[in-house]
Image (cartoon, rainbow, N blue to C red; front, top):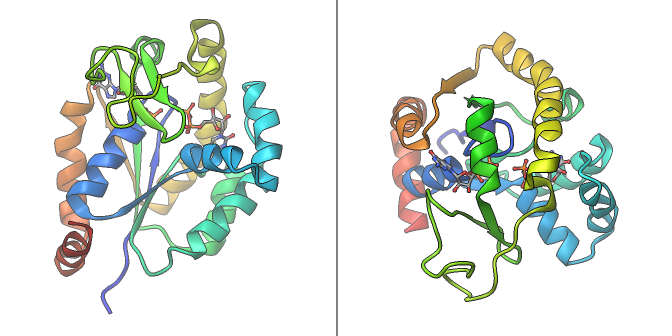
Length: 226
Ligand SMILES: Nc1nc2c(ncn2[C@@H]2O[C@H](COP(=O)(O)OP(=O)(O)O)[C@@H](O)[C@H]2O)c(=O)[nH]1
Ligand SMILES: Nc1ccn([C@@H]2O[C@H](COP(=O)(O)OP(=O)(O)O)[C@@H](O)[C@H]2O)c(=O)n1
């Protein structure tokens, strides 16, 4: 069996992790696992972890490490036969260390986006809460203003994307992420991309993954996902 491929995408809220992950999933056939979406599914299903996580997210706080790892590691266990791209986890050094002991990563993509750009994007981010689909009123607007393209249901704005909560959230992200980035840099698997536009970053991410993902794996996975 060919080797499976494991990747993580890091970056502050609004840096384009979800947008790039979707492109990676469709071009390279990796499974995209977003911890934010998975948390929202757990909250909607009122699982034990979901009920607990909700109390933190509502306050704009990070979900504690032991809750996140207890949620994510079993989910990754279910994907041992797939190649995947993990988005939103790990967020802290403790989460990165827990992930380390569960599996070996091939590549870490880190998005380095200027603060002003992040603020501008998140102000205009709207989501469809049931599916996690993300829109931007300029970059990828819904076909009908305020309405999800697929379900026709109303879009909402995250409380923590509103301007008042944003700056503190982005600043906090930086402090927490630094040791995670340092860890992956020390392991020699970190690839950092800096720009203000996802469309300019994407060709570099795409050529990195083309070089790193074994071709037989990419072909096989494409065949099963299309
Ligand atoms: N203007 C602009 N918006 C973008 C770009 N890339 C992503 N977005 C939007 O910015 C917001 C944040 O992107 P998302 O992929 O959700 O970032 P994440 O929080 O890191 O997962 C979304 O509304 C995206 O549609 C870009 O290059 N330019
Ligand atoms: N590893 C993680 C991932 C998400 N979260 C929480 O879940 C929320 C939504 O995650 P997300 O990845 O969809 O959103 P942003 O990081 O773009 O805000 C975050 O704002 C955190 O409150 C967390 O605490 N720890």
